[in-house]
Image (cartoon, rainbow, N blue to C red; front, side, top):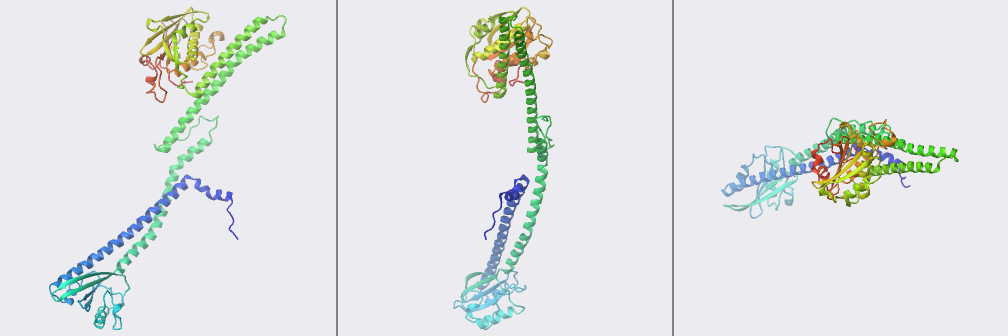
Length: 522
């Protein structure tokens, strides 16, 4: 029978812990630590083994040097081997003459408890003797080796063999040293056993520490997640807890709170905008409906041309309001610096055309000698709308006249609109550019307008990389100043900064109270 397949739900249940960052980091740390520690352990064992083998070879070479020096000086093989008898390095020393006869076979380091690979007896075949070469006198060699190893049986060992030929007064002798490596191997085995026990313990300790530290580090993230999970459209005033640390999690919490603040402000502005828009739209609709219902109840006595004129006036007002709302909504969606297609627009012709429209007060246009034809890059319809809104606002509150003046300076076109009305208090000069803002709610609606004209004007001027602000007028009322660059500005991503894209430097010299921010504050 084949093994049953694991259901998808079962696999999801088993793989669910892997979705935890804490589990994944801990597993990664364990795997990396295990690989690193295992590699380090193998390198350590190999290094210790190589170092001990090299040390053993050096010791054997030293013993052979001593024996060779004695033999060259004329000492007998027994005397030469006896010079290293008390050396701490264990080894089997054999000296063979040119005819292959074993002259002597001794064990260096007899003060220790070590012995040779196999007990030599008279019956030991010549080729079973330790070391290379045939044993020409096996009986004598066996007697000698048996006497040396008479204190106990011999331990099995792997031999490290080094051979050297020595010129002596009696001829050429071959000295062979066989050093067993079993003692060294026991030390390496002990080290290996210690690593096999210690490394898993180390890995477990690392896993526990990583699990604890990651859990502690991610605790603020859980708090942030729980708080964000409870935030809804009606509770956007809530904020996530910010840890006291300045690490990535602290910056994340700070960024999320800043984002929530922006969303809260945007939601507040949207609710206010919808409320104000619905209120403003209700008025012309109600007036239009009232006039039509009254005329319908008395169709014989109704002055239908007057009713039609009233309906058309309310419809025009409603259409203008909708246009303003659509423009501001498009600005909110696309951004304040999303500039319109730029063509050369004669600002003087735009101002004269807007001043020529019928209003309740006279509008005079003055153009300086240097600004007979003042061209700025932009959209002619939008600039005409901005200038018309400023002139309409001035004419709405002017007592007798409105004056529009155009000039050029410092690479910018300057347009001022002055009226002789009541003026604007310094504390209110920024607020008037907000949407649906009226400084005096007791004014009649016919005079007060919808409260969107200045907001639309500022939006258009800002999109043309210009500035607009309010100040005192020499005529005693209010003055609105517009400055637009006469050269095309680079896109926002290429602009050097707000101060350079803002146009002339005079606006900056006037102080921050006159500089309108790039983004629409409403």
